[in-house]
Length: 317
Image (cartoon, rainbow, N blue to C red):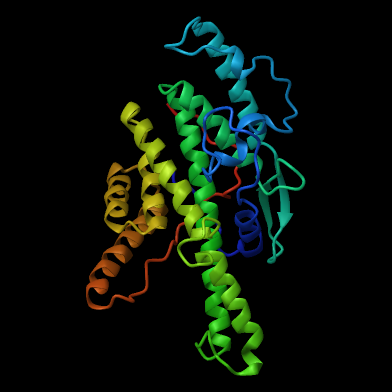
């Protein structure tokens, strides 16, 4: 069913969540994965299972997968089951914080005390390893796609928080974010800081920009959801994810395609049906307005996702 998110209480926590998820250094790449990869890069080699409070009984190097010499289906199954248990452990490593509104929110714990990667990102790296070795493992692919979406959505809500804050600050400086008045210097500096955080420095080229990270995770999530959906087309939860990902990426025609599918399936509650139909109307109106005014206000992400730091996805397929 559709995810929910309280948009009124995320600024500090989602911002910290997003900023704390930049790439770190990593050890030699034993899995032939590029260290430049923003998603897998921080967890190559021995870092994949770093600081896990879990005794690993079957090492990756001890397993021969299908197509390799000495392949053992029984050993591969045991290896996959153990990785599933490790992933579950990672996704349950979360903590509750109080945000700026005094509301409780959850965030994933860090893997290392002096590095920014979280247990959610570590789970994604391990899931990616499993799916790479066992491409037909549909349930694991669904969980990987879910986690990628969760991470990407975290960046989206952090961007949303930054833009909301920018709008507030702009109102304080006469809607001129470059206002030269010395009395506006503090607000002007903060606006520039937030824009660097969202767009990067230089803009649209910095891999650590929130927008770049959101695109990277959502693009990968789309690929895995698509592969899963081809294998398990009866899973009605997938179109809802696809609608939200395309919304957050600004792919409006694709967004409408999947939003219409969700609405037409008839699985929404009366409240959700009204809400989703309202979103559809808003998107359609925006597409019309955009033909007249290129600066037309974009649709509002009015749904309320569940907390982006849920403990674990439901099993798929």
